Amino acid sequence: MKRIQFVVLMVVVFLLVGCAGYGNLEQYRKGDWYFISGPNQVAETMRDRLALEKLAAEPVLAKKRDGIIQGYKVILANLDDYDRYTLRISGPEKKSYMLNPGEQIEVYLIPGEYECRVVRRGKISASNIMTVDAEKKRFGGVWCHGFCYCGD
Image (cartoon, rainbow, N blue to C red):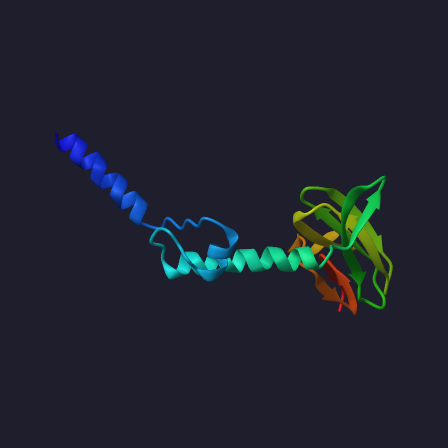
């Protein structure tokens, strides 16, 4: 008997704690929730929905070949006027690019987190994390989905 009461109590608690359910989209938009849900969960759900709508409205800058996306646009730049640098990128894809002084190139990488290592005169001089995702970023007056630069 005590087990049954405990199970019933746990089901009631589960239903009352953080279950946000709605019957249709109109009820969702009005905030007419069937179950009790905290304001943080409601706000997070609505924020996520708005973020998805925003991403759908802004197409990504991608390279397509035969209808298949090859990757998102990424800018790599050497801002130095005198030295040549190599950028070693490792993450979902591994690539290496040697950039002459003042050179800037566009490459296309699949989404993910990349470690971008800057090699100068055979030694790693810097390292940072570059995130390539659907969010657009601006580098040097150009829109892209990620960037990495070296030099001053």
